[in-house]
Length: 88
Image (cartoon, rainbow, N blue to C red; front, side):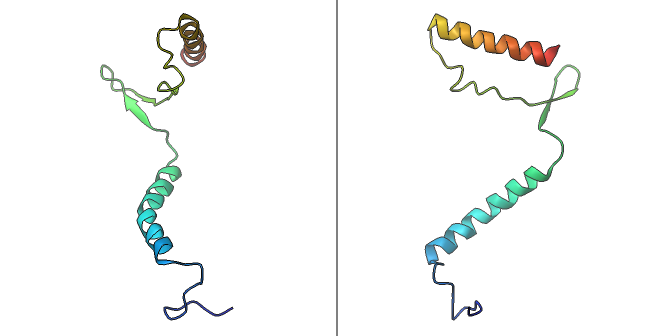
């Protein structure tokens, strides 16, 4: 295998792939830095200043059930179980 130099680029490296890598590299570095933090994301409670972890329940799709009473009851049951486990 011949060593890489500017006169002999790897055959599968196109200008498009190189630009994609250059554009994506800051995002990848940011993501790697965020992943290395040991503390979870948190937010302060306004009245006390106490920090609690942020928790997402996927409300945009999972709980977007409209006016269907059966689906709403199922979503409410999920929330009850969640808060019973977290708050208790």
